[in-house]
Length: 121
Image (cartoon, rainbow, N blue to C red; front, top):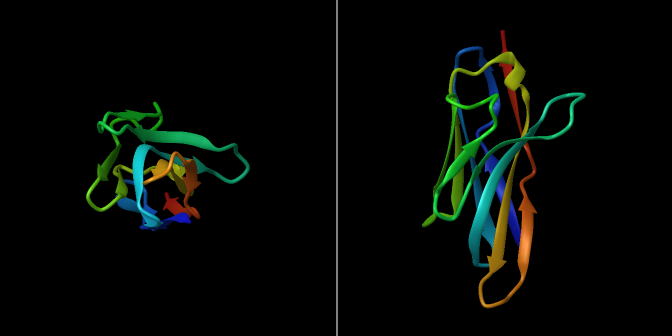
């Protein structure tokens, strides 16, 4: 029905930047909230950033001032700009959209497949 396509992961040296993107595909939807999560090896999943329908953003303390979440409502896409990356940012990053399928009352929480970000020291 609805799925997310993530891109932008990769390997970068400490201090570098990467931009992740996540786009909705499938049935037309109205997007409510969006979030980026990450899971480092051997650790539990962590909420990194959220952005509301009104584009109000919130960040985990660990990334505040370094990461920026933004959304393009016309393209149904969310971005995570990651600057001043640190080795501890190494993780698989997942996007998470809360959507309503247009023409229905079906509310779904849809997750991306995950993209690996590796930051070397």
